[in-house]
Length: 153
Image 1: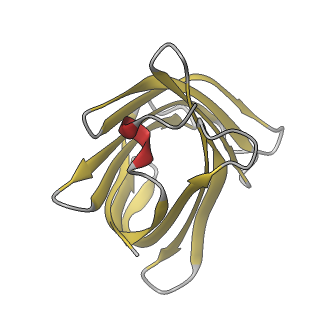
Image 2: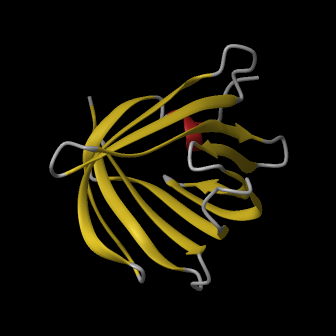
Image 3: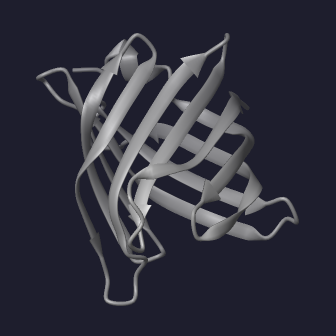
């Protein structure tokens, strides 16, 4: 079985810029690179990696995981961060829009204290990937954290 069209558009490398904010840090701009590729064992699964850099060129963030299409027409996203955080999401993928909400988040004893995430990914204007990330962490409620528009490279 092959990946549904609602996810197949993601395959490739994307680059762009984003804006971030959070209650306990200064607003920031960043450069983003995301890659989705078919997982080797299952064509219903996409491997995912993301790397970001601040405006001054210093490394900012990275994460990696898998986006899975289910037979029930839903999607699941599993991510790991070098910040000592793992995320498990469930969601939907329809008409160029993917909506994901965290089912579980765990962090190591020294990891970032993230407690909830919500991610939205959209296929926009020809061949653009737009996303928005909301996060609850360090005692803060779920609020907007960052968003970016990337283009296929």
